[in-house]
Image (cartoon, rainbow, N blue to C red; front, top):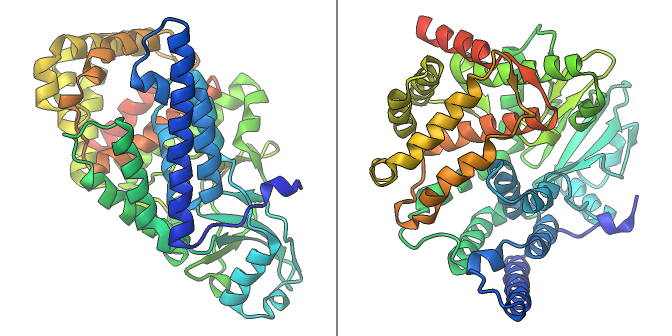
Length: 442
């Protein structure tokens, strides 16, 4: 393992604030350099063109991966939620945040585990692998063997992460404000409050263990999925021990036959629909690292339940009405339902009605091309961008959807992004109709 992957987690408030200052300074310097180059070529670049460059995205990605915690988590959210909206170069760079976290140095790991289990913590295991098998925004995972022969995965939270959540999010918000990326009129206070709440929940490993048990019971006996069980006696607020289930990264599914990719993505897409319309309970973090795959059995291993949460009835019904309008092919009704779910405001609809009509027309045309939806066909994206550009440019009408809509859509969009990557071909309309019908019947 390369020593470059080991970076001590900054735990002090001052050290983390300083890192944000380095991000801002690096981005500003990059903007000046890029601006000078473009002016020398006779161009008159916009500030947003200078800000959203691959070089700046690389700077931000590297710093966030060192900070870890809430800062990196927010970067991961952006990389998933942006979907097709950002340039491909930026999307690819930000996507590195999904699996580019640095590891804690062994000495820092020893300090964390000794504080949790005592100085003799190694006696709890027959073997404990110090080199992590995975690292993410909030913690890293180690494989260990218990004295009874059971192989487990031990997720260890980075020190100081829980205490830094509020300040990290406030610092990210400040960076967004001073960068000019967000209009002054847009009130992001509700988003910040909810982001802090969810990330505090994700940092509580006792809560995650409970959500893991609930999710495991929900899918008990199903052929397609495997959910690990927590080891209660070795789990606490900052350390989560669970079954180790051997599987490969979901990315390797890309090399599988079309029918295998379709079957696997069909199971994952149907799971999202069931979470929304059947269970009313959703794991809202679609980070690709949360899915693993067993080539020999075809089973999907589901991981990371810190972001699992109940979906309010009004959100479920609003989504059902929107999807039903889409299935019926009624553009006027679909526009109303999009507004009802919260993706657009009444003011946006009034000022940009033609643009929304264009977006809806493109979507309905693409969805109804065939009974089998080809996720690899992205021919409609450029047309969507063209219609959506006037709305995006009218910053005075920007608004935030309800928080529950944001969390649900994050899972829907992330799963669709994975289906795109896998070039899946699914009977999407029939799948949606079946699950929406179940909610209506209930």
